[in-house]
Length: 472
Image 1 (cartoon, rainbow, N blue to C red):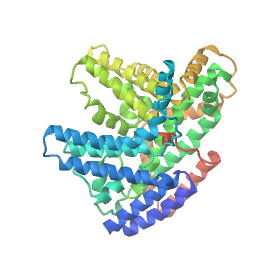
Image 2 (cartoon, rainbow, N blue to C red):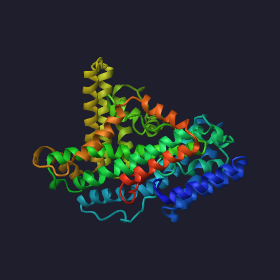
Image 3 (tube, helix red, strand yellow):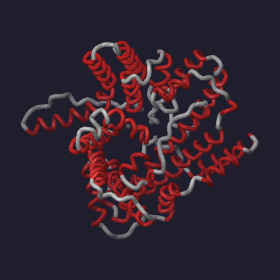
Image 4 (cartoon, rainbow, N blue to C red):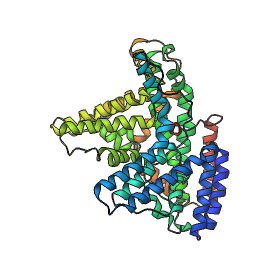
């Protein structure tokens, strides 16, 4: 079920009303929200509801086993944790990486004259599996570390299935969300103005900005770069940078806004990433909940920067390579991770050896921002391309096919400028607009929101494409 659809509007209206009616009664409310979340998930494919339920059982059993062995010797605790994590990762490994692994192993064996060691099966990737797997894994590890205790079965099921974050994040940790389930919500304390602002901003980003750039230039150029000129390829690359930001941050804005209307707070996931001064700064601003997950549950357990310079570089690179593979089972995502890993290794080396100087004036900041943005865009070429060959065709065409640019129109350039330029605007004016909206009467607020929806639906295309991160 997509957020910007009539189906979701009706679904959320029903959920919103029943949610507040059941708000005083914790257990009935929790059971209803679990049921609503499973309906939301089943809207995509009811055949995979069992997978979400089964994973929730695996995560909770693993959490209880880890907690139950907390007083045992270290070796036993580590064995129990390892078994719990293998069980938690198993569905993701099967559905997301079996075909990729089978194809590459078959190719490798074929080079030596062997047959196919694995059958090549058609495996459908369940929507949202990467996100709820990471949430379940963090839940189990945090119990092992003594940061949290196991939740009850009902709370655990609700934590992993809560529909605002279910299919594309943010990746909310158990200590951020489960305690909120125990608290009765006060409808008078709901920040309706902030929720409305986030939802409208998210709808505009997705329905208008992202969809327009995809249909106007990005999809056409990336599908057949050999038929397009260098200016079109350059603008398509910048266009995709704006498209994926508008698409994913738009989803996150809507998710956070919807959760706010229900009385829940999610962590921020984006903070003007294209204003970053370095790749490290970019990852502090882009998909922030994933960045923190990779840091806390992969980079630091690998040793972080505690085991010497060489090991630090290896840990950075491995973290980014696995982060790339998390996004998709394809070599294009591995290359994308390698680009970011290499950039971060170089940046770490420069910082630790006194070669990296802080930007002391506006000119230096602008240069750093331009360099960082273009390295990020280089990564997006591989991220978006269907194959390594397509990516290199894009990069080759970038410098070899000069000529006309019929797809480079003023609306396209304007959309790109809006998507990037808005991240440099001060937050004061938008905050003042939100304050003015919050002081309006409910009737006036309704009229303003209706007009905003009218503008968005008028500017947007017919139908809404799935969010990009649904496929991860």
